[in-house]
Length: 270
Image (tube, rainbow, N blue to C red; front, side):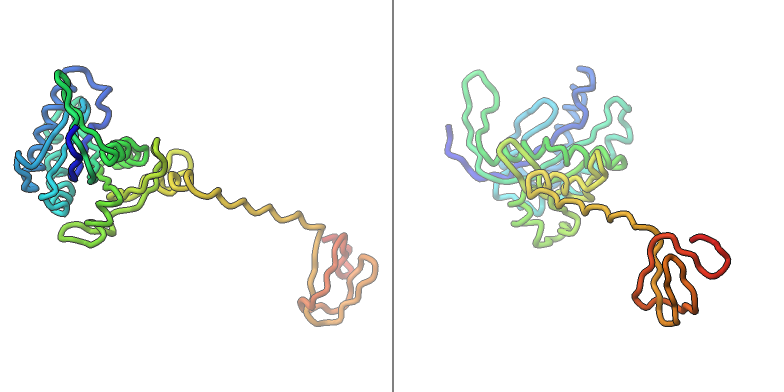
């Protein structure tokens, strides 16, 4: 195994890939490679500054740390959606492409084996792959029917790049989410509005965060039912005897009358 080296980690995954037939999947894979190629060229990434690994319904791209993450973000926020829109305008309904995209960073090593393709090793890469598969990212893409991609960045990328508001990167458009993965809780930042949770309509990020945090506060007990009619008086000269009230009443003065009450001489029960 080689020594781990710091890379920018860029992941792509095609939505609903498994529901296509073999011919459609092959076509989509080719188009994904075209879109990734055009995206990286637009961001100024040379062939010698990248490594790509096929993942069937997606792709891993390791980018040299020489390439600006801010430049990559701008490209993913503008060029990539444009490329997808242009492709989908002409594509058949069976080959429409929508992507989940993750931008992260970390240490990755190569551990190739003879006769076997691939061989990437690294905790940071594993974490990025977990993020790509989270429910909040899937729901976000599902609920944005007028968009062709959704982007999420890792917390280190947000803290190191996004929050500083570089040209073309608006930090107010990113929202923090806490998601549960196999290794524990994971903080990430979703571009665009948070999706509604499937069950109660609450923001998905809040739901994921609540699952790994403190228990929800207990609901307040309902108020006890009243004990019949209550009257309050301000001023006047009320007289109370048994269950009868007579005299001039002008408002509330702090006393209370409860139970069956007769007002005036009409005999109506209130």
